[in-house]
Amino acid sequence: MPAAGHRRPPGTARTQFNLGRALPFLALILTVVADLATPDGERFDRLLVIAPALAAVTWSVRGTVGIGLLAMVVRLLLVPTRGAPTRELLVSEAVIAAVTALAAWVSRVRTRYERDLREVTAVAEVVQRVVLRPLPERLGRFDLHLLYVAAAAKARIGGDFYEAVRIPGAVRVMLGDVQGKGLGAVETASVLLGSFRAAVNEARDLADLADRLDEGLARYGAWDPDSDAAERFATVVLVELPDGRDVARLLSCGHPAPLLQRATGVEPVHFADPSLPVNLAGLADSHHRIEEVPFGPGDRLLLYTDGVSETRDRAGTFYPLELRLGGWAREPAAELPELLHRDLSAYGADGLDDDVAAVLVVRPPAGPA
Image 1 (spheres, rainbow, N blue to C red):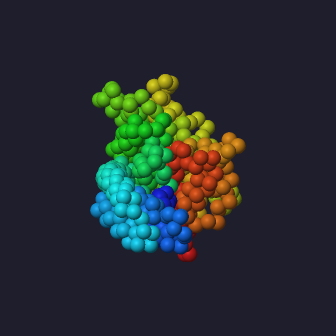
Image 2 (image 1 turned 120 degrees about the horizontal axis):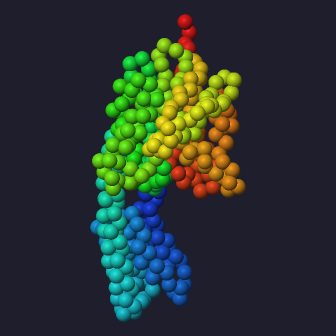
Image 3 (image 1 turned 30 degrees about the vertical axis):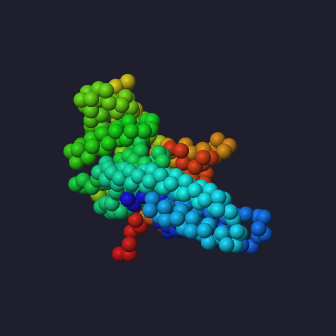
């Protein structure tokens, strides 16, 4: 998906894998050289058992057994140089055979786990494409750039969610963050995404759309009272970008204020009266106030979740997002998600320990007449 680079580059992983496959042979060569280059009293041939043990890390069961048999053959070839007794030779060969058998079993368990992981990863990628569809690079007259990182190791989806849809006369964008983590947060996010997609074309305005999100989650909770999703709330920011005017309309349901970047600098969007988070509207009188701000050619609007703004360094200081965005004013918009991802990873005391999502909405500068 068009998220900034979150995964290890394939070339690096391939190099490490190839190095791992070469290690058993390197161990055999070094052992033979050391054994031949040292006096008879110093025995290195016993280290041949290292080769099948290393093979279990990267080689298949057959490959591991083959490397173990090769180690046994090398041990036999070293006999004339040492004149080892037959009993010692048999014991040494038995040890190599036993280590090879154990290594083959480890290799089998590893390959089975890797196969299961590939299948689960493939399913997760399909689910991601269905639940969190890739954002188009352009909607109407606006460019969209996404950063999305799930906190769970190997996960593709977390509790942060996003969507952008072109409707007649405008573009509508949503970014949200479900309270908590885990599968319950993913379930809640999927419900809210479904509600947004079902209502985005029909909702009169952002206030109506926010009500539809509340209603959708409430209906889901009534349909499945035991669902964890019924107990969670979510902060959401909604944006509407009309075709005919150089403005952006925004509505915040308890979400961090987006940052508006213009030629004059960076400033947060001020919400005079933000709404309650989704699924908490019943705690008070439901009301929504829509803010309207200028959004002309060359302007950028950054929507983000608290996984960005609440990243802390070792001293406990929050990530200075507004300052960083101001420093990247001259950077190409398409590169900002990757810059943000690298900077967050370096800034966090323990890297990224929360879901991170950010959508950069760009009104490209007007071209020549």
